[in-house]
Length: 86
Image (cartoon, rainbow, N blue to C red; front, side, top):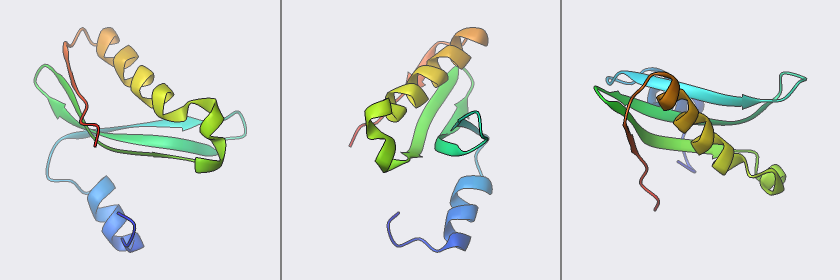
C-alpha cells in the first residue's frame, strides 16, 4: 500500500470487483480521520483494509472503525465479521 499511486488507490478502494462497503470516521468539520473497506458477505462483512490519521492515534481510531462496523452489523442483524490482523 505504501507505494500505491492515486490511481491504484482509487481502483483498489472504489472500483472493487467485489460488493464492498466503506465506513468513514469524520469529525464535525467534515475532516476525514479514517476509513475501513469491507467485502460484503451474505451473512456479514470481511475487513479488507483500513487506514486512519496516524497523528490522532490516541483517539483509538482503528478501534472506532471496528466498533462502527460491529454496530452496523447489529443494525442489519448480520452475524459474521472477519478481521485479519497482520
